[in-house]
Length: 93
Image 1 (tube, rainbow, N blue to C red):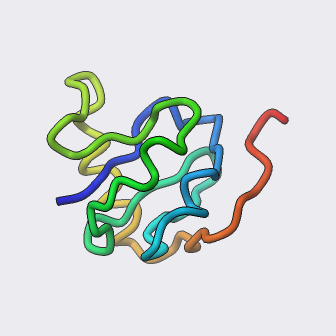
Image 2: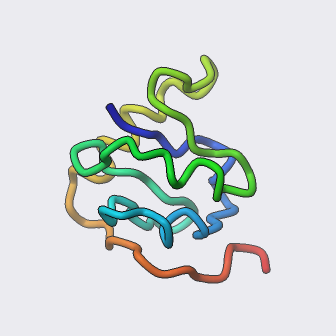
């Protein structure tokens, strides 16, 4: 099982979640973050840290954002996104 970063993260990209991740499964693209489903251990530590409520357990992703389950997997499987482990300034601030 895994967690999924969804649309509210786009053009926001708070990184509070990456600091608490014990397995460093977050990856950074230009406008949002993604979780690698192969690395996520389903600990849920990231969920309460997201100030825009963009992270959901894969079984609880809202219908309108279901595509983000595959998007997270595809984006992180490509291997061209850097792993993110430290907090950064969010976009727009």
